[in-house]
Image (cartoon, rainbow, N blue to C red):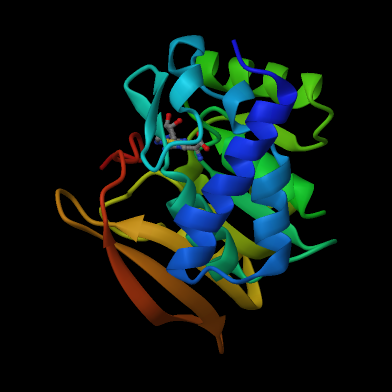
Length: 212
Ligand code: SAH
């Protein structure tokens, strides 16, 4: 078992060695990563490696991304306090908590019921206020649109139209797209269309449902 102080030191090391050193410099993102207790979101068996430089299993064949990827995606989204963000793939709720910690208003959709129930319980216990919904993220969340940013943590084979419609002008979409080889795309809505700002090769779990 580890003490709060040990966890907090592990987080500080994680931010220094895995994130800041790889050029994620947004202070809001770094502070959130230093604050949110990642170990509370992972399976008990993985507690000791909660702050390691790798993804971790969260059950139901799903994984929580490597800390650096979470930081990179959050920074790329370019949002801060008071912005509204749609997240697709709540998973264990860690990425959700990072956004909430930054003062973002988060709307998160998850398709696997037990994962959502578990994430909800963790987020509530730790006092993160977020709105979640069980369902297929391919439809986005029409009733809550428009969003200042959309962050997708499961990879569809192509970008669902709903995301383009529900993103505000100037808002960013951060999304892994593709089948076996994927590109993490950072896109921005300009003049009603999405423009790719940059791409990073990545590997995510597939986005299921959506008749794909
Ligand atoms: N951000 C998560 C990582 C989740 S892994 C975290 O911090 O833990 C990707 C998640 O997307 C999984 O939980 C998976 O069940 C979910 N997912 C896959 N397809 C989906 C879909 N169509 N709609 C919503 N969630 C989906």
